[in-house]
Image (tube, rainbow, N blue to C red; front, top):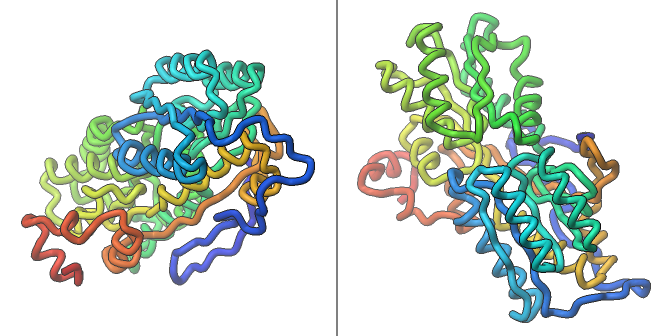
Length: 368
């Protein structure tokens, strides 16, 4: 995928990216010929349930926004693949057979789903790739700048190591699933920051992003490097970070090395508060989901100006060039800015994070 050039504010690690909303959109153009009114159906295909974001944030946000945009006449047909590419293919086949008006697709396997994307195209159903860039003739794409996410993680890890940054510092990389194109980009972004500054002592690609596999691979790394031989752990997401931390604790590591993450899951936020995990990349899922819903409705209703204003970026997939796209902002969340990120945005309440187990740590972090 071609990366989009953008400026990065290194001091804040907050990254406002291009096209984060309908700037300049004014509804349908004079050339638009809407084929649907408000009585439309959006098919929503999400990839798995291990990451709590999909059911907790993405699906409800898409449903609520579609309802708002269509005066509650539109509906969302939702299916979650449970990390099964074959199940997702069947789910998409059903949506094509049901003649939904547009499909928001977060692919389990970006390559294998191209067959169904082609079938949707042949049936006249637009497909918008959501969060992961699927192959095939998709009409648009919305996500975060994935290499930038990896860069944020890598830079944060170096920041956490501080004076310990050296070629002798051994880092273990726990990367995402090889079938997820985002995982490759996260890794590339992280390596762009880490290579030449530390030693990548072990690197693992974790099937289906499973925390239990991450724990097992981390245990292997500890066995090879020694429990005091791991200077830091790059974990591509929070679920795997939890698995890696469990392995470190099981090996008797008392002073945990800095561990990265992504997704700002509640358990990870609590680990950050307690000091077990150093950071997570906070990605505002409701913003992504709401903008995706707006793109889907505008596409179906023929509101070309509005759709174009939502997709001002261009990216390439292995099969399709110059895909109209939108990149949403990301923030490096550490103990110091929990209040300014997930709490300020209404993702969690202080009471969600600061249960009895974490009350003392929350007090120290100023979360009261």
